[in-house]
Length: 320
Image (cartoon, rainbow, N blue to C red; front, side):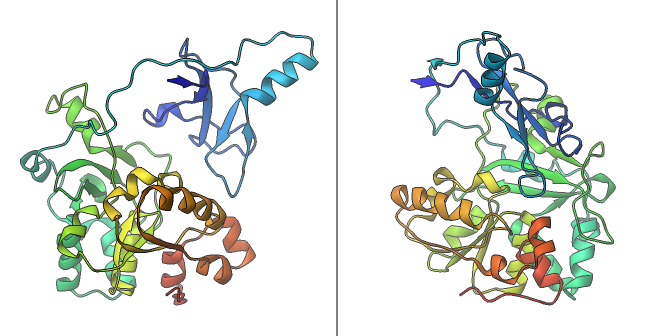
């Protein structure tokens, strides 16, 4: 099997993300690396993760073209053999005992995000507890929330530990400890092996077996899945955890399902194209809604709002 010699640097903590040379956003710039040497190609060759608000993407091909114009011979760009890969279905898991005892705090209701949602969505204590139990949410220190990724077979793949602003409900970024992975913490504590092989799944995937006939709603953010589950309870709400996680491997457990995907503003075309690939591999009825594209203002498009923003603004869209 061959692969490109130059690829975007895989995520390995906040230190693997840099300041964008175009918009100046910190820890949002992904550089290209040489897969033969492991070194970065050039400090400005890469892509800003702020796709909608910045969109900077300086590719190796463009970089080499500029070198040639300066009379400099660039290194080769041809594909090179890649080492044999493990089977795609090989992955590590976190035992249920280890997962349930790994919470860094013991009161999910007191996390900043759930306090915000309880207030804005007018949730009773019983409704909030049901949300916690349904999605198996846990809490971490400093008001952070733990979003587990538990697959349809009941295995915990990992969990995201995320910080939110109590007043706005928005994610806190670019601050030490504002984001982490549970498996990384457990590895550092010696509770998981260092060769732990991560293979993510959809947030909420564990709910599928208990609701075999229920239509599914797919959104990007875990927070949005929680909000939609309260607002549109006729659907089973799952989250990809990122725009680029809208992939066939994530959708394999959704075979035979009726699925409504609600992309963030500006991501409709991307998810629509991806949906064609997904439905060629996974037999399902997948509809990508343009309800956010139609409802969002120009400013909201530029900010990349999602369906949760409209719900919290008392403008819940209809997408059925």
